[in-house]
View 1 (tube, helix red, strand yellow):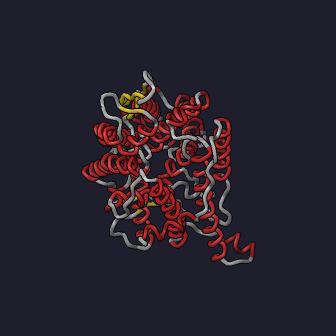
View 2 (cartoon, rainbow, N blue to C red; view 1 turned 90 degrees about the vertical axis):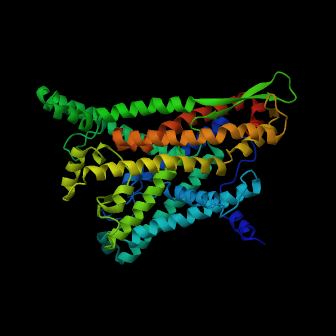
View 3 (cartoon, one colour; view 1 turned 30 degrees about the vertical axis):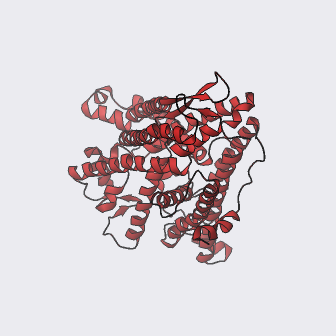
Amino acid sequence: MSFKESLEPFFSRLPAVSSPEGHVHFKNKLLWTLGILMLYFALANVPLFGLSAESIDLFEQYRAFFAGASGSLMLLGIGPIVTASIVLQLLTGADIIKLDMSDPRDQAFFQGAQKFLVFVMIVLTALPQIVGGYIQPDAGIAASLGVGLGVITFLIFLQICVGGVLILFMDEIVSKWGIGSGVGLFIVAGVSQQIVTGLINWVPDSSGLPAGIIPKWLYIIQNVGADYLFSGDGLMFILIQGGILALITTVAIFFLVVYAESTRIEIPLAHSSVKGARGRYPVKLIYASVLPMILVRALQANIQLIGLMLAGRGITIFGEYSGSTPINGLMYYLAPISSPHDWIPSLVQETYTGYGVAAPELWQIGLHVFVDAVFLIAGGIIFALFWIETTGMGAKPSAKKVFNSGMQIPGFRRNIGSIEKVMDRYIPKVTVIGGAFIGALTLVASLLGTIGGAGGTGLLLTVSIVYRLYEDIASEQMMEMHPMMRSFFGQE
């Protein structure tokens, strides 16, 4: 018996949300999706019992696309799910684990292995934060309960793990009973909340101005003179601190992603037995979606977590940190760009003055931007290729789906091999182009900043996920009206 075969019974016994026995009506899917969304918001507002206010959020810069909430049950967000996916995709991509994703048995093994890895990653993500002292127990609560700090620490660890498991099963419920995926739904919820807050929040930020763009503009109109606003420094102030650049970037990214999502190559299809029945197989420009960008940023986040933990133990060979932000060394170059404050020299100088250390030189800033560009573009291509292979979107699974639906490509013999040959002309090439394009778009959005500090990655993910959610809803409604369409989409 092989190692894989010995693990299959164990993976099959892991707790799981039961799949629907038949077709789930659109109304019920919508109710499940909305119910899970409301539960997510509720859990994100449940604070961790016993958590000290002095605790440090290691993933503060990644909250937008990790869909977590600091100090709450949703502290880990989708981080463990994404990290488990990275590990498994790298193992399968390197052929360390040999799987044929067109084989239902291998698909089940992949899903079981991923779920097991998520459980492992929940512990491995929470434990270092506890042991490293970044998540600290409240001494006052411990004293009032008459227990030691160790007991409160264990309770915090237990709550974090429970929250991680809950979000895993919430994602599974949406995937099986709802519309789209839970991971995408939680990202949209978190980023949308940040954008709304970034528009209307009147609480002052570190600059003393209201954090929200609308209150900020009202404040500037009332308190800043027109002569300053039309000067060189004033224009920079309006663009950056005033949020004009972030607003323009947010709107531009929205339209660019919608345009890219609607750009596609359509492969003509004809039914083998029904004369005149024709269709098209769309291969979108962003064929692998923008979810591989989560994997790229998650990889950077895990690298930063290692550096932060080493720095916390006095090992600063890879760089020093101010809070959770690297300020020098290798980790500075590997950190993601998130706003103009990370690359415009005058703003970098201003930021580092607050840290109380010397700012990086111009060539160091340029190298930082270059490394992040390589991460996003090259990583976008690599993870996009991994993504289509592990999710059954490659040429071979797509050809099999077309063949099983009774369709064929006009002018070619009706067999899986000939369909796969045509699919192979387009899918890998479009995946590479789309991965590079989405990486470049993420870089531009990160350089210019976005409303509410959602970040280029978070904004890109949100727009793309919402667009695809709209397409999923339209598809569900079509299948409700025309039940025969279910066979093509693989529904019972």
